[in-house]
Image 1 (spheres, rainbow, N blue to C red):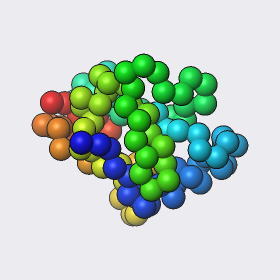
Image 2 (cartoon, one colour):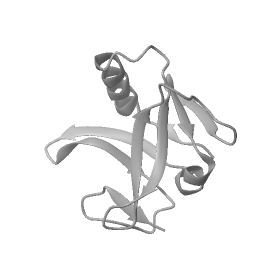
Image 3 (cartoon, rainbow, N blue to C red):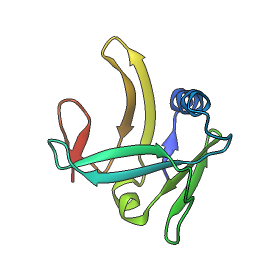
Image 4 (tube, rainbow, N blue to C red):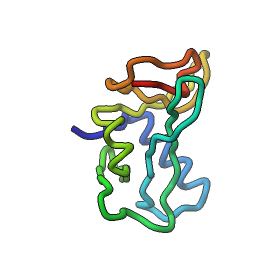
Amino acid sequence: MSISITDRAAKRIEEIRQHSNHPEGTPLRVSVVSGGCSGLTYDLDFDTESGAKEGDKTFEDDGIKLIVDMKSFLYLAGTELDYTDGLEGQGFHFYNPNAARTCSCGESFSL
């Protein structure tokens, strides 16, 4: 199992990377942290300093390198990261098969 990225999400991640002047190939760290109205929330950030640490899972999909710590990977295995910019709002969306419940805004989840 891995984490996949849609073409739209990969394109937007690359646009953000270029706009923020991160070097080409800078990996994206994906993690799950406590918070939100359902208990857990997703966190995305470019990993510009440490890179993969011992125990981290690394993936590459659609030209985007991902780093996920093992604890977060237990929540994220099989997840698809997408990006939408439609009338209902724009942003990254996680389609997580492990989430038993999500909040109405889609920003947090629980198992």
